[in-house]
Image (tube, rainbow, N blue to C red):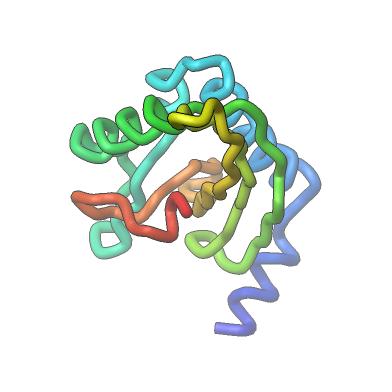
Length: 139
């Protein structure tokens, strides 16, 4: 697996990095602009057992929609990214949102992690393929 990782990493170009960051930043910009549907249209699920890429399912879309309505993004900051294998990569952002409390507004910070996947020569922002969102997708 280490050889595969080295081979994959050596095959990457600056364009790969820029494309992954462009997609992640666009997703976060859309969330910040309260364009949640457009942002969620950028998310995909990779099914390793079928070697298939598809848009997120309706259940996952509804869960993310509810979560971003409850915790709308005020600001975000790229925290980290790494490339390991075509289907094992990480892109992590910190995001700030405002929570209404009885004492006023509180600023809160959380993180969102994507798994960018290079599939058939194209990059996709993915999340785990489940009926519910894994805890590590949005922390």
